[in-house]
Length: 329
Length: 272
Image 1 (cartoon, chains in turn orange, green):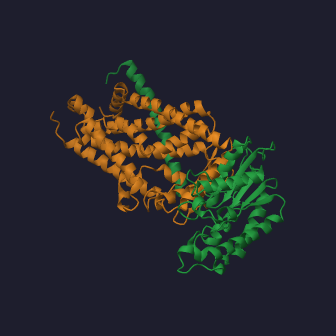
Image 2 (cartoon, chains in turn orange, cyan):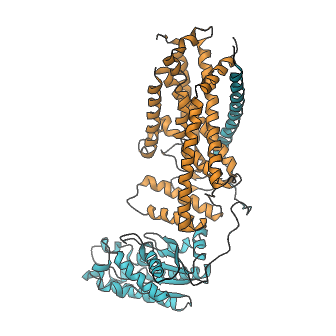
Image 3 (cartoon, one colour):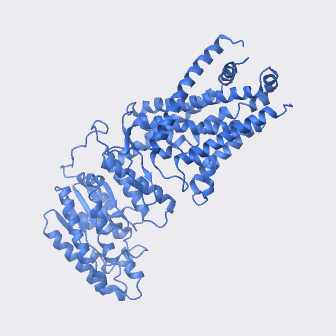
């Protein structure tokens, strides 16, 4: 038994046969149609207000945001986002490109943007939180460890399997979102131009490095970044599931951390050390679309570094604990 | 390791798909990092097929009103109890009278002065909205003249007529440029300029200088408008003169719902 692959094979089959992955697909298949329907209603409402003219609709949105920029009641934080929004939308108008060209591909791009910091990590936890603790709850861990295989190999095989399923979940999210929303909005739109390279700064957005890419390229980049986020969250959830005996507890711990992250990103601007927390750095796709970072000083390399450190630390802890700990029950 | 046939199949399918997926995603990841870290700015050249060619200006010629509003808080409708403003109320009145009317867009921005309206006219989105309309309402100048009410609050003494009129020569010149630029952008549209009223006519120390300043402004505006064929001025000075309590909102600067309704009725009288 030198090779690790039979172990990976075994883990993969376990995940499929225990229907963990089907749960993920089922959640997507139920929720994506709901989002699609909501989006459809919104589009219909806008059409009755503005007709088919996206330019008028966009200009009205710009004016509405400019109005809130002048208001003293609007917090400075929101103004920063709106100022960036106004500049970006004006850039789209100047180049006569519709930023929200209706279609399944555009929907998928927005869906991925919105799901990168909470929804997809939650889906990944379904698998990651269960990998080790389920063996413990089911009592199968003893059988696994009494076989003549080194413990680190067992754990490594589980980690490889986790990586495989992170990739599968990210790709499935894309496919399901595209297929379902395409039925409502149409399947075209891979070549629509999207602008990227906006550099939000203190005095406004720097436009010098803005360039257009095709929407499929943008989505590919989004998915790559989401994959990295998913892997980090997966490794953390994996560590928690090594440390905590029950699956339920490990899921609760991870969920609390993720939800804390979404709350913190909305209000932590003045607490700058919060940027070293992993859950504040999950919105990597924001660096693509050019919306300002939640905390001063956050950049893509910074966020990647923070996530990488957390991921690495959790791998080290997982191995240290798993190879040393006595298995009693 | 013994495996059943179905297990082998599961392994093959999942294994191969996930390896392919992982490679693609890592590729996307690297692409994203390099694109964010070393962005190469380039100007976009439309290939016209992407978002559809710009539609020809299709302003209805069937007597229906396609209305756009431009300017300051009065254009936006600040102070109105239900936020409609005189533009939305005009559209509602026209519809009640059996006319076909549509508010294309309301581009009023609180606190706007003449200079920023003039520069906004060069934005493609604003130009597009103006081109879609056949009736353009403009309300601007009050913030230039009264400095958004600060003339009243900041100085210990009541501002003199001279202080109020300090901005008049420059602002009225900008107003002329605004109106001419709009007429240039959309030569077929009818432009209605909303005259100013004196929101301070119930304060003894500012009533007379305020009245004089507003009258001077309105006269200058009327002179500009009279020289153009497709423009009119909607007077509001007399409406508010003795009715501030009735028509002003609680901020003592903007009209309330009733005040906007009065303005809308005037507008309807002049265009119907």
